[in-house]
Image (cartoon, one colour):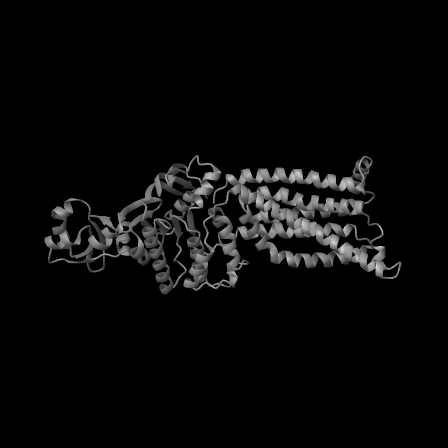
Length: 236
Length: 298
């Protein structure tokens, strides 16, 4: 397992460094444009999780690396588990990056004059709302992996399979746009909002955030088990 | 160390048909054949990269089918593998590739890797993508040997090397085998698939030839280099050979040439005694293969 994690993290390191830089820029940009940093939190785990997913599976198809790794004394289950853990770590790094950005913005807001744009974009920030947004972001990021990885481990990261994670995020984005822009229809938004409100009757935003993360981790673990089973039956 | 018996595997229009071979302890077995003959499929079956349809593969005396995942991982820790390209991701540095291999192989010897990298001229500070194809292959060979495997599986491992480097690698492999023989540990067997007959002539103890998924011949290398010969015959010479005891055995193979007919004979000295007037010479592995893959039985 250590060998698998080491190889995955070594491979993705350079792309993650670039990804962190782009994430920081995007979070600040959208926070300033929107006047609220909370929606921008989603960018962190989603973008770095996506980087991890795409980069790691792409390397598998290069120069027989996948065959070479399976020729090493490493079990297929370890390869799958290592990959899921690596992508989870990438997503968590995204969460850490946005938290760091929020911390820096908060420090800047404290030293800047009251009522500045910097302070305004942090108005709605509180621990509960931050954890909730990180929870939603991790759900999106890990759901893309949970959905795509079993298919990739079964058939390889080739052809149409390469577009599966992108298609997932595109579907979410277009769905949100349609829900917001359709005439008289904030249907999906209202429905999701209603659902969150209903859950919020029993849970605080903080609790809801942790519940989302815990639920997604359970789905993620189930997806990893399915991938391991599919990968064990794959021929090269 | 490795025994394969009755191995079958079908892939669409290709099938590996009843392949049997073995790598005895202390021996180098060369696997030859045209592209698509099934050499890599055999190697994939041994490494568990693909499941054979039937047949038996025994690794270090243990049957592969039915082996638990943990036992198979344990068995693979005793095998060093080199594919036809440097398979390590190109963003890694040589040092990182070595670190990954050292985490995977319990017996990996970092000091040995450093000395092998030094001997083969692999720069440890460079990234894999900065290495030439030949240096990348040398890196793969150094990593495989530093894992201190008992069985080494090379799939066209010398294909990207220039003649000098090939000689260097073949020398290194021979040294490893000799060292293992003296010390009783280390590389005790090599299965080597290659298109380069010169490498096999220098190193192999046995040669197994595959064609369209079937074993065409499996012989001791010395039978080819020391005993066999090619006789350059005219049509009348060929008739005399056909009528002789040698021809009656049905073991002779012929290959039509522009100005003569070449006959492959299993014992060139015996042939020369019977037909002193027919020119006969030593046969190379390439020519030997040509008799089996393109020639006819006399």
